[in-house]
Length: 199
Image (cartoon, rainbow, N blue to C red; front, side, top):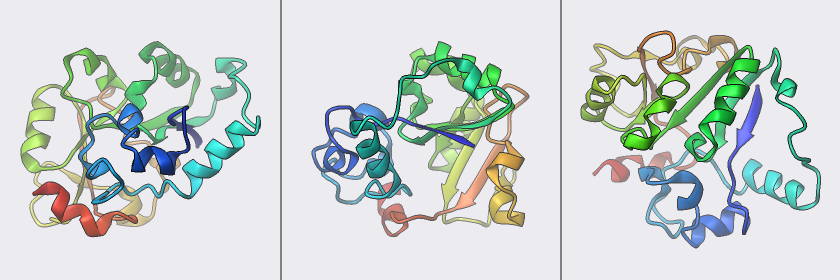
């Protein structure tokens, strides 16, 4: 899948996290931690791919997007890092329209100004209560959770269930074709902070 990264322009992603500037691309996501790099439960290790991509961009390796046609027939992951709602919705719709499928998630699903994103993105929810609220607002939902016992309306992510790659599944494509709710066990480098983040 083509990965769409949203990075802070002014400094590298590791520094951005330490200085709290990641709020510019992650919004109010609880998994940012304490705003100084501590208590972070995000599964993305910013010192790996995001840092490498930032450095490559600074070195001139990434050119401005020449045309939406580069996405034609390709599958896209909106927000490999960073919240996709920091892109213009019109651009995201054009990319999705050109692509052969996409995935994407947002923690900003409560904001009235961002409801148009429901058709493209999953509401990234953190509790069963949030799941119900998001669904009542018309969102499909995705939940990372340590609780795997009570999922009456959620389906276990196919990647975790049977090893299906996201590029083949594409279930996390918002509510354009109807609502769905998917969950996956907590994972990634920030997993040890996950319970704290929910308190």
